[in-house]
Length: 558
Ligand code: GDP
Ligand code: MG
Image 1 (cartoon, rainbow, N blue to C red):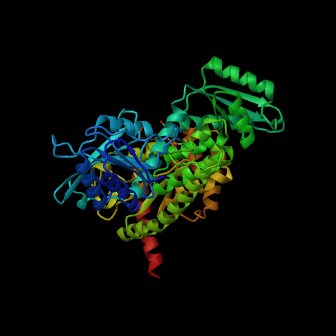
Image 2: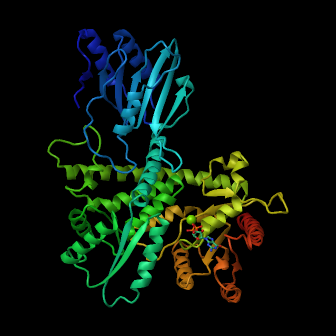
Image 3: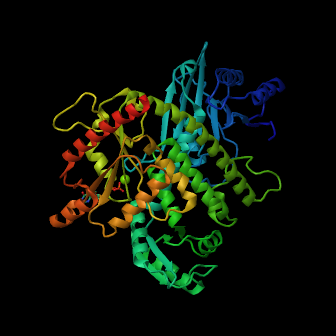
């Protein structure tokens, strides 16, 4: 990187040039947006020149560009046109002076807001210094929600000295959140999908396998347009064979589908060939599951783990031609001399993977702390588990609704998927509070690469006083699915935790059948949708969670 001052440099005296160049020597700590010193220096230079001055700072805190504008305008240097992937930001933030005297607080002009969005900068921040006090207005992208078309959020800090903000942590969480919302948008906001199962003739349950893929796709919010089963040995190159692949693509065109989801694990080479042969987005079962995890992972650790799994899964799938590559190359100076785009894509991905692994390590240590606090608070936690789509979230919401209103500081730091269970009609009972935790669904045949990510989303189970294992009474595969969940629990060494089995969706089956199933599984019958059995469930959860909390306390006392 040349330390050359850019922009509107005409008419600058050599001494002014030098002042600008000196800005390159500054370095910021990873956790600060801007230091007081740098803010003052930028502002002082701008005041001398009577022009806007801007700097671009890398995520690592290095000043990578310094440039000058006119009195009112600032033109950013060319940052290249690489597209960035879902959730990925430019890893550069823009800091600039605001000299205007028409307002007291610094302001971000609309063209800079546009740059923030277009270039996907980490952040833009206007700086204004008066006397010994430096003020700042900063803005960053935010994930879009279904109800809000707003993509940018801004804040004003009146006194930089009083700012308490961890920039680097904020950025990783923001990127994870953006990735989550954007990948959700990718899959669920597609025009629609064709599901394709390719099975050997010897495979005995193609219908069941495709039915499960359908359920997963629904869980991910995909609009399913059609499904297709092919019984043939998978073609090593194109999975389907060239002719059949053509047919499938045509079928998608007619349906208006822009997404194909294969039930089969696609080898990187197959994925590449199929992707390049069509304009459609192609994903396989693992990618679909990762997308669901991405939507559901609520803890910072879970989100990082999911992103890590996604990157690892995508690494061998990076291809020169496909947009998948340009998605991963970003930023100025991203490419070293002589590197091909593909190498850059891989290097960036590897860098990000290393960064994520680091971050996950750190979080692991913080979690210990958080856990300590929770044990101290003595409020037991009950985790709702079960196969995907059995009604876990519905039950969670029914038992905790509006409990967030009770602004309790201790719980303010908890994930949104963890809330205090509401008291029942008998009202609040001292010492009988329970935290409920909603979890991501379990899935059969989870690919190995996804297991860590999946477990991270289940990390909380380790601290549970009680597992509430939900079954879907109307599911013909109820036994297989219960077994699948039990198997994961066994693998995670959680089988010994106390379990309460709940038979949900009883409104969908005849009463005599409910009775048989409840007996068979020693389960509490329930219809979360109609509210039948909820009070009993609430009471049972409370009593056994409190009981097991006390057991644990006894256990540790001896
Ligand atoms: P999760 O994947 O286990 O969290 O399941 P959800 O809570 O998202 O529910 C999956 C689907 O089952 C949703 O369409 C719910 O409306 C539905 N559902 C949940 N509980 C019941 C119930 O008691 N009866 C019926 N008929 N449907 C239910
Ligand atoms: Mg759920």
